Image 1 (tube, rainbow, N blue to C red):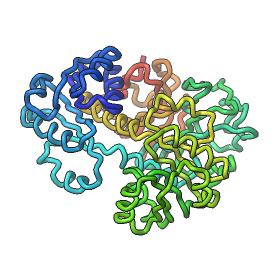
Image 2 (cartoon, one colour; image 1 turned 30 degrees about the vertical axis):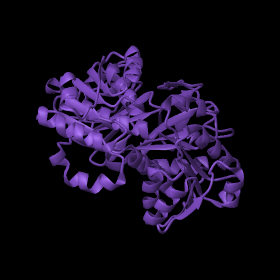
Image 3 (tube, helix red, strand yellow; image 1 turned 90 degrees about the vertical axis):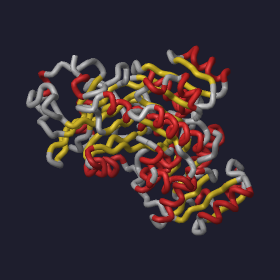
Image 4 (cartoon, rainbow, N blue to C red; image 1 turned 60 degrees about the vertical axis):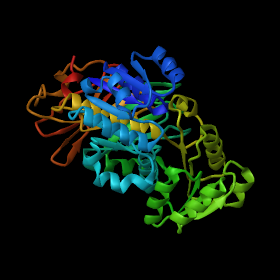
Length: 453
């Protein structure tokens, strides 16, 4: 497909990388020629320098021939005007706009058709939802939901003396006293891979485990993972993610304290979040954190615009014994450095935004048989995709042991009429079943039949 990406910042660059890997014909627009030239050397994409909201620039980008336009500049208003103008020039165009300001959310959903928007993306809001989900049912570093909430893939880190340390996966159920889960991906020494039954789990591994939600609750108890309910949360940084997250936490009865350095932002937050405690101070200062009671908080969430500051503050929170720590990271390429550090769960607004857009583009490309859910796990190096089996799906009713899958692909879960099965060689899928497939992203899996050799 021909895709125009308006805005060549962090999100635009990440989308260029992901969509170029999938073979799309890309055009990137930005007002900064130097940025365009630098990124054009890295990825196979045409570039247009100019204001993406003008007809002249969009015409130069050949918007009349495009299938999708993704507007991700730093200005909401430019993104909206870009989509509106592009849709007038090409009525069949699919348009996606990044809109970050909380002030626009309600009216945009009401006026979505007027703006010609196919999709609205708010990275900070998505990040807040992800963090709230992690805090609502604590115990795992990350949780991804499938099959209408019946199945999850969760991230765990294997620590010293864990029940999972030095366990061969073929013996996993025995080691867990009959609790049946499936390890579908492992990060070890900075490398992500899909394990086999002969893989031995090691201390320090980050593993991704899938099972029905009820079974995962049993796993938490077996592993002795603390599940203390969050009653008090400390947020470092008063940006948009803090605002959205505070709304959800306060609504759930959690006491919220926000530490923000800028006086004017503190006054704004005090006005829109009257039930939160707003503290003007440096959230990276040890004395400020100690004075504000970091040792007594149930959860610490570091949300400043500086990854390094977030990491250091999270490390201090872990050292002070905070039960649940979550760290916001903007540069996902640096997350491999964090695997062995006590920074708790790592959340990236940019990564969440890109995953949602890529899923939309894939669904457009393959209307029939496309994944209904896509989650990028293992720091984006592995994908977990949810498919609904239809009459065009291959090998319906065939035992899995007879199927020839492509390398590094795993069928990890089958859900039928509300009941979930972790499949073995004798399992099969039927029309209407939900099937979760895990792949290492070497080749894009656009539809279910792509998994077969």
